[in-house]
Length: 131
Image (cartoon, rainbow, N blue to C red; front, top):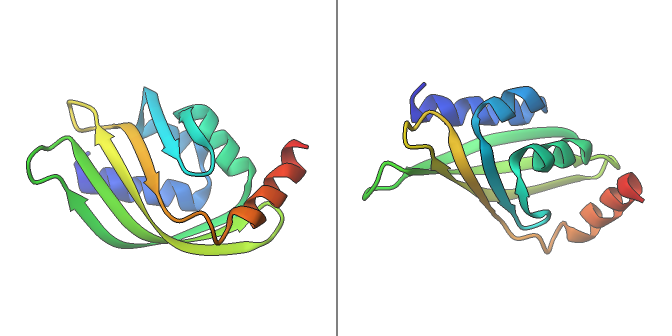
């Protein structure tokens, strides 16, 4: 699977809310750096994300590959996230992936977006799930 296919499979699995498909794209020791969830191992991060999600819809805007190295790729996309509470939040974000040496899986994900407009809705929805 090439980098473009890996990225397309990622967005498709995210839209489906398919934990197994998402995890199959990551190295088992992968980590995620998220502005809402903090630093987490891949499995717990996506389990929490999908538990907090009723629906996800993404629209890919750009793909950026590192010109100096083949070790990273970034996806810029519009994300329509329906929280568990039913509240819909929309924003643009950038997911920066570090690839494994074979470039066939993701080793690390750093998620970048402004959480200010959605933090209160997220906190309320998330608290109802974990509280």
